[in-house]
Length: 200
Image (cartoon, rainbow, N blue to C red; front, top):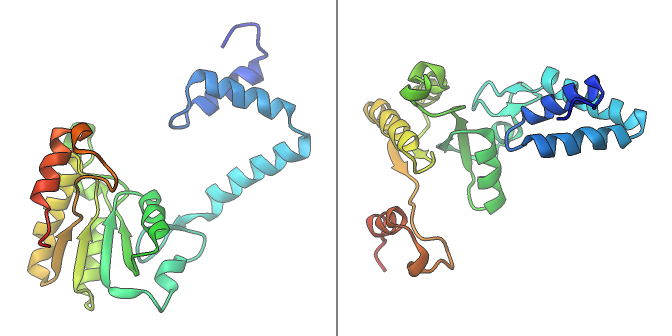
């Protein structure tokens, strides 16, 4: 931001720029927009930020974000508690729930194993997953980590830990998207589509 801007506006822009996916130009637009808002709107915005940070925490069961001791999914008696879908972030749960096709439980790791980034197994919510499975009643654990090097490594590591606990460990099938065209598919996508093909 140029030096002619007021210092509080520069500081506000720099704070917005810390958010993921927000560059300096977008951050400046947001800062200027805040300046155009009414004082009570700004106070409500600031209050919402502080309130979320103070009251939202990890679910004691699945590690999802919630403002209760257990999240609404874990509290729902209609969910199938014999199946746990393991995801990287709480945002992944939202993606699954949008499909309306999954009725099991979740477990959020809050990251993936990545030694290059300094993220080791102990940094993830793995112990609580193992405790849930060891408590009994779980028949299947679905590895729903992304098909990346870190995602595959994390899924493989978890499957090794879970297999001795006598549960079925499965991995999401990855391949061509619905409506996709072979011509424009990359090599990895085509390989995954072949590898995960189903009998007709």
